[in-house]
Amino acid sequence: MTNPSLQKNKATSYLLAVVLSSLVACAPAERTQLKEKQMTEKQSTLWQTIDALAQQMPLTPAKVEAVMGTKLQEQERSENFVHLKASGPALSDGLKVTEISLLTRPNNEFDIKSGLSLELSGACVKLDEIRKQFGKLEITQSPRGRSPLESTVHASKESWGTLSFAFKEENPDCLFRVSFRK
Image (cartoon, rainbow, N blue to C red; front, side, top):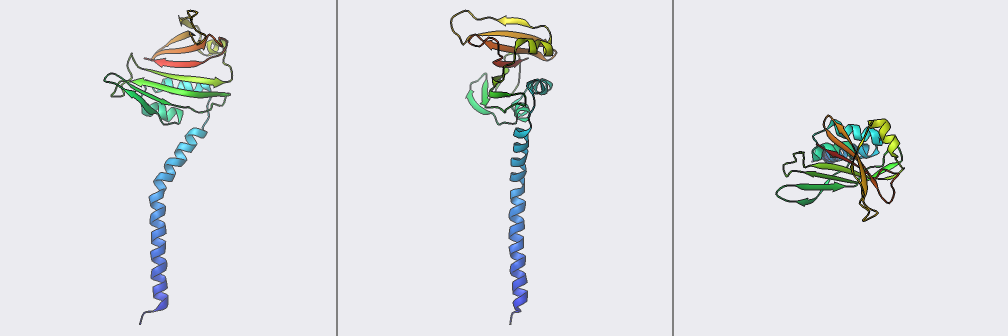
């Protein structure tokens, strides 16, 4: 004859083991989701974001993803380049990174032909604000009058490469894109 309380304890123990094993199995996925949520909730200013990316030079997809809190998706691949894109986070200064675009070598090397650009929307960042942060800037590209989508690009030489700021002809007072090149 089987003891009913012994059977009940075995069933309870089995059920507890199943629940605990499923919790343990789910824990890594939940930790990953929590980490991703914390990264997207962590807001920084444009200047903090630029500084964080500059400190990661030379860039890799993993470094950009870590700083920006988003997953880059491959858009195109050739024997010479890999092009990755993602939408970016809202920043704490009223800006939104609408597009992140990273171009690297197929082995993820960030060389002189590679680049990262962050397209922005939201608050208007004026050239004077950029000069306060980066000092003297050199104009490296000017509109040719063919399209309102052409840009004036101002650049700052940094120890790690070139940081560029683009202003579209259709809205010449507000920053449109920030780019990083080695």
